Length: 264
Ligand code: HH2
Image 1 (cartoon, protein in one colour):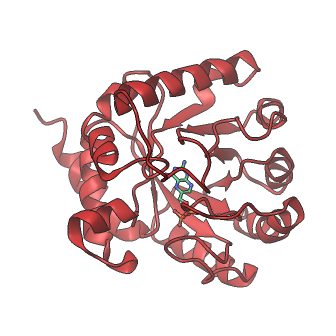
Image 2 (image 1 turned 135 degrees about the vertical axis):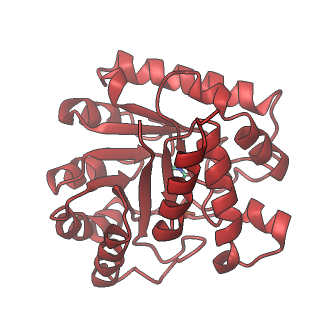
């Protein structure tokens, strides 16, 4: 599978990297068009921040934020992903043109979500998170982070398939930064091939995340070079979908990585 670039479109006041910049739907739509022009294959539209410590968003508010943006951006020649944990939001986004559901709770938050995905025949991203956003960075611990995340994703995959989602529609994501220390994130990136071995495409989202600051000391908007380093390494380890804020530089990085990896 060729790598896919998933451009991030946040319609939130509080996302860690660009919270508030695109809360106005018009700004979010302009931003989505820009990412499409830069070469995104998918736009991931979210109305609820899941950064550490973030507060949950009410259903009506989330719908109000994302549905008009999905509607407008679905006329573009690319795929739309809805980043939500809620069945109603997924349902309305699919009706408005989304074909991927990106659930950071991996179907643990809303029991109705799996049925919505199965009925629509949508693609589904199942992501690992330890606990919930409000508390996930409070002293996360694992026996072996890669083995634990792998076992979790295998169990969630089995659950989704058991509930009627086609296996070939499911993508898996280690959830970089979701209940993980710097060491955990680095271990997951270094051993990503062990998750790829499950046999489903692996989604990778490290763009601008705070572990990069622990290594480089950079502010959130200065983390592109660090992000690109993770994109290339994750690609080399077998990840195939890259959720990023800065699409154009990651497209170039993947072109170079793709032309090089696999020659030997
Ligand atoms: N990270 C965030 C949100 N959604 N989805 C997937 N599949 N993988 C991720 O790593 C992932 C995700 C981070 O959330 P937030 O704090 O809202 O910020 P942003 O959307 O700017 O990344």
